[in-house]
Length: 215
Ligand code: S3P
Image (cartoon, rainbow, N blue to C red; front, side, top):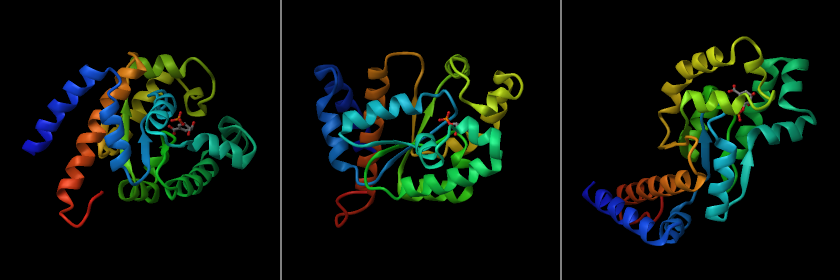
């Protein structure tokens, strides 16, 4: 524990000294040996942040909604309209399972994907999970920019998001790491994530004993 606290201080100093913190970035990229799965509510910034994180770590970025749309040949909204939510969830579970079996990469999961117990089990056991968390006001503003989220078309989007938050936050908070993605700079969110990833990976490495070099 003391080691982690010390290393966190070091990380802060490095971050301040090098701006983008090249050392942490390199350490995280070197220690990571499983996919990173981003979870969180619609509008939290999973896709935007996921791209930036993948880019910083030199990894591929995969977005489950985009993969579902590719496989179905239609938008998520059209799948909901034409076949209903249960059909979408079934496709989402299958596509997410395939993504979670990939080599090291960054995967943005749809906001509801982790509510499927099988998906949750895979995320907790096969990935480093990050809850991308944003204030409600930010998610309302971001999701209001377009009409792509079918669940938010039913009723007052703010109330829907609040209801989803109540049901899902107890699951999201089981993530290995929580990254706060507010309306601030994406570089600040990236640095925060790299610091937390570094501490997490280091603690897993320490916990795994002398034989196991990586998590
Ligand atoms: C959903 C979130 C959406 C998309 C679908 C349902 C949800 O993905 O999968 O509209 O249940 O929260 P994003 O979280 O990427 O917006």
